[in-house]
Figure (cartoon, rainbow, N blue to C red):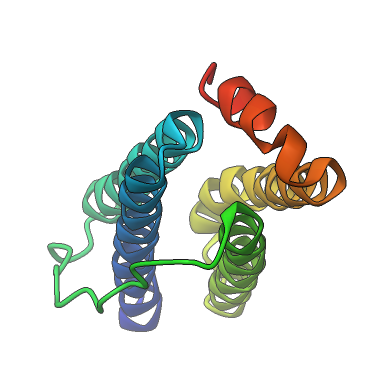
Amino acid sequence: MMTEKLQDALNRQIIAELWSANLYLSMSFYFRKQGFDGFAHWMKEQSREETEHACMFADYLIKRGGRNPTLTKVDEVPQSWDSPLDAFRHVYGHECEVSEMIDRLMQTAIEEKDNATQEFLWHFVREQVEEEATAESIAEKIRMVGDAGVLFLDAKLGER
């Protein structure tokens, strides 16, 4: 059975994943209101993925015989951004923070000598490398194309 310390850490990650889902859903609404349907679609897919991550953590906690995941209050997320570039820079910064959270969670699993949880977490460690790279790449493309090319990128991200 997992230690209380590790169960607490996993439960905090569930709430963090739900906060991320709400952040991306908020961004999807923002982009939809601004007429960027492709960016809105991309963010909605991100939100769906974050909800799936929360469920993966909850399922893992239950499978390992931990206590029931506790869904506490999820803090409010931002509601608007200055531009598509500002929003995607926010995404990149947020993904870097999530990577730090996963790293701390891995450190806790190591300290608690829980090899199964370490193995479970490697999926998220690898995924965060991709998430950071993708967000940074999109932000950089938006910066490079400027206002004239942002609609092309919007359409491209809508293909996700």
